[in-house]
Image (cartoon, rainbow, N blue to C red; front, side, top):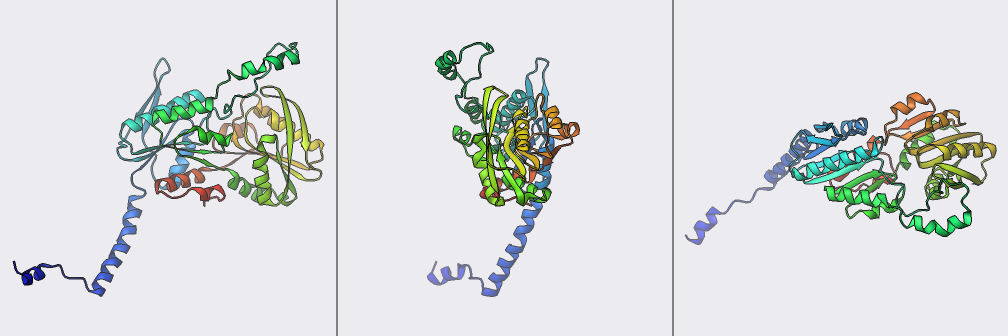
Length: 378
């Protein structure tokens, strides 16, 4: 073939107007494909611990909740059946560490493994309230039931008990990784170092932006408020909120004689003639926050609010709140709160489903989630 014939077979270069029309057509058609597909290759499944939160998340994402059947055999073994294909999909499993914690944790592990061996491309565990988060270190043990044991003798053998204490949060992290989880999304870990227990990415979201929004919208006197931590461990949390509200903070130092029993409290800070806002990451039996509320009222606070990320409310918690001097006890819906709100009119709920939905969307699209650390998505 001659050089002239070769030149004839060469594709002609598009003229500028034709190229512009082609690019314009491509730009107008691509978004339509994206909108019609509505987040392709994503599946969101819910465990039995908090189906309401999972439904709120998928409603905000504009997708349907994945089909899954969970049942128990007669010997109480958990059985999970994924009802649709997850091959090559980006899977998110929503399961909170509340209620029957051990059953729900096992159910989550089985769901993760079921999706992983069904060829899911990535499995993300969305755990709003991380189970066993309080067992994050070899801590001091509670005193034995023998009340007459001498303190000196107890101190001499205390280290022996501490050396055998489990670090269960690390065990849970290992179990999630072995089950096949590729990524964890959670909120307000009891101890931030739990993120270091994992060898996979962990996104620890903060309820702080939603808390700030609630304070400004629901407490008229918030400019004359003081943010209070019920223990020294929460000082960093309350100082961050106080700085963003431009108000002062205080903290209460507590000493425990045994688990779930507070011996004494010392208030550090001036709350006289101010609205006191207690802030903590979780409340279980509520002994601490109820004692703290009494201490604040004795110190001259005009009103006392409590704002908590995880409202576990076990044992005598509800009766304690009903009998305490709170204006309101505000919790997020990382744990189901409908039953608690019916039993106690003081309990109010902040919906954080939009934060988890946005975290899922950004993770799926490969975007940064750090925006959510200081902002509430609308």
